[in-house]
Length: 97
Length: 297
Picture 1 (cartoon, each protein chain N blue to C red):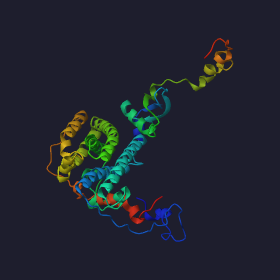
Picture 2: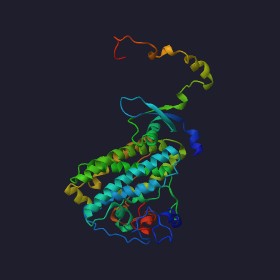
Picture 3: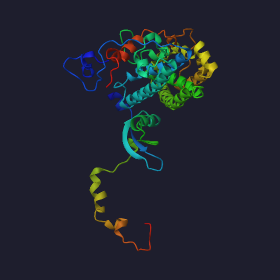
Picture 4: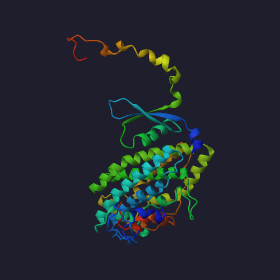
């Protein structure tokens, strides 16, 4: 099993639960190519009727932020509450926001 | 198969003195279940050929549980085994109703003797496990057989969906979707193995040599087929041959395989005369119900 694990690329699997909703990341699996990754995603992640659509993306094609950059990338937002719409008081004449 | 000693927990009162498992019905007796004998009319035979092919193929696929080359494919193989079990259950229930003695799906699966099983001989051939009588097969054998059978079942279900028997038509309609997926999955693997490495192509080629002689039976025609065709119960096997060959040849072309030349041998599982492997499958599949007749848990 370990040989194949090393040979087959890893794929990230996104499943849409029903039409209208977005595809959500639900896990990953090994498959020889994209077409087979879709089939194996169907076997592994939708066997209890969890989905109506599947996306597969090669894990190596995802560029991720570096966890060590967390401080400079995300922490500065902590004290900027005015970026939330709830920070602002809407006039009564504006309905349905 | 589990050794008998590990089955103690489901043994009824009497089989294991001083212990009583609350999950076991009191009526269960440790002993040997008597075989049932069906009255095999042509329509019962017709339905059993499909039911038993699905059941025995499911049993062979189930041998992969925990042994798949990767966990993803392990899950895929057992999912497919369960699809076939579901088809077999519906068909066995229907065969029992047609037969008329009041048996149920479980009795048909677990209490018939070998001669009353009417599956295609191909389905009972060893697929993974080695035994004293067979070196066993490999993943290529499995995917090739899945492919050959799924192509056959898909065509069968398509035609059977128009059966004069409403229940059979409904079973076929549901099974057709499953067969389409099995065909796609197994077909894609046949292409990958055939068009893969020298080793995978060599193994697929020898799997084809092993399986091919048994494919004649898939398209043999006898009185059971003729009666089903005439009554509108379902298609005769020989009516599927041309479409099947076309479908198989198309995938083989992609895989770099060619259809082997026809051979004269016609296996006879659908007549109840099986290869030497069938008894071993039944021994394993039926052992529990034979040892603990009517046992439930």
